[in-house]
Image (cartoon, rainbow, N blue to C red):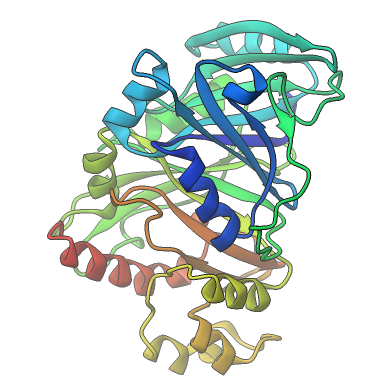
Length: 360
Ligand code: FE2
């Protein structure tokens, strides 16, 4: 079984990384830490490394149609290309996953410059998404060869997001079990949590979801598939617009969701609207909580409880024009689940948005 230390970073392929970076910095609180592009000797693409707490996002834009990112953007729009995982042993992780049936996209390779070396290798997962194994231990530079540090980011408006909680994949009809088995067989992951359409449905739409996790339960990959219902599942809408399976949402943890969401709203972030009556019965459902219900209602923060404790969460609207990728802000106060008690309110909210797009 491969040993994963942590998430290293997520790489997005985007149409205009310079402009996207502004959105992540001024609205979502990320700091521009490093840049790679023509000025740093990189002739094929520009990449911006953004960081907040332990969360690292890389936004990459190709300089021309011959770069593989160009076809990716043409087909999928802006989206997550690589979920990069920090490992001790890149070669071992690559060899083991390939032996267990993963498709190779990049043999183990060393990137080097005067600051040292980085070992990387990549395999395929759902859709055109990839997993890259990386070890940056022997590298003293800011991030990777080609990147130069940015001394000061005057645009960053921090919102105190701390680390990645989970990264969710949407897959096509009847494909969830295939990908669940992929993570079991290839990665040695286990089922952390799962829920089916008997629970995960509204009057109109439904989905199945299984969360796969590594041994330490630091890495969590929920996999969703559409399920039959009266109208179109949000997962199907995603796959229609992304033109394949792909990353649906990225959940980021904060220690103080009230403060984080207040700042995000001040910065202009748009969240799914939850009707006021959700809060009328909230305390009956979840019992005693530390937060003031009026404040949660004002900010649109959802709460759910499981046998371990409770969690607070909320979801942005899609962060690009295609109704595909969105973000989640989550604070866990003991709660280990994924907000099952909130699915109904949430799905009804998503359905209102789908209807407004003419896609329900
Ligand atoms: Fe989530």
